[in-house]
Image (cartoon, rainbow, N blue to C red; front, side):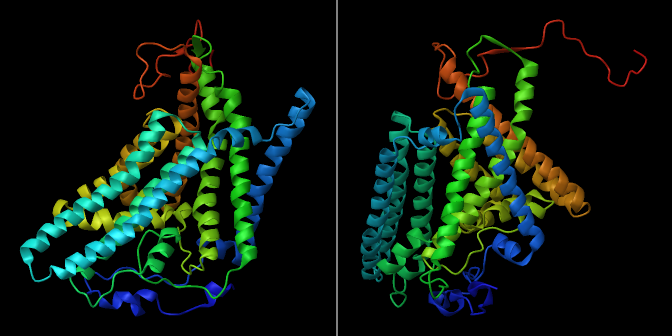
Length: 468
């Protein structure tokens, strides 16, 4: 057992600043916990073997590509070109990130100033209400600054895909961070006995792997640098493999899409199914990279004790459990800052829809700015079909958990195959198709170019007709 898993200390929420909160406002506790996969891999030889199987599959795919390219073309292609292209103009991305960091840091003195004003106007209800309105508009203004400048810059001139994804994700992360801090300080503005966060606590929270603010978190005694290095190497390996999958499976099928005015429907369908397996591998690799390796590396660096960033979503038979367990970091923020404030006024059903809508829009902003076009495939998959499947899988999943878990995995395969097909189709159609007057950021180019048609003299033959 690791150091974290041996600990049984009470949570900071029970002993720290949250002792001032009422029972109604009391929030879920932070405690010393390891990530689910960390526990499974350490405790189960079977899970460790599955981990090794995935690594072996990726190694074999790499060897296949290296040997084939060496024999057929006299060169070795292992995805490095995709990495270089994906992280192009990285200096521009760093500048945008530094801008957002500067705005987030500037929020702290603004918070202290507002807090001092709120306390001084405690005996003047009218002025205090005006001050509260000014504070609300100030918070909204800072959040708009965090979002508007990167969106304007990325919309003005396209940035490489990976660099743009990093910038836009960080943009939303900072917005969610300062919003969480502002909300946590609302009761403190009325009671000067409860101090505002110190700059040290605020700065720690900006980089801690959580979006729920606390003055203190469970901390480990030391940094295990071997664990940090191991997770960083995992992150680099997954970036490399995703780039390799892009060059090995996506470019051969879609890089010429749009160069010819017509394409056979059979070719398109066959290419889509060829992208299912790499799409799922990328899906699983992206989950492991961001929500396990990356967050655990930062948690170890900051000695952040609570490593439960996700739960065992892969065993679920209900989409409601999947959406909650997939990413506990974002789920906790959406629950505390959208669902709970909205649900009493709108009801749980509409509040759930608002949460899905907000999450889907944020994802679409990231994808649209990263690819350079609006193509809401992900929004439709999760924001429409995902919502519609919530009540269905809740009802059936309890009675037939194994069958529904299988069907959920079929949907993951099918959905990721579509994502890894439709976005590249649109991306290369915009590069390869001739420009027209109707070209638009919001209108898909791949719908009109190239023309998808059935094979000449195509007829349907009944596969069950054994007499002919």
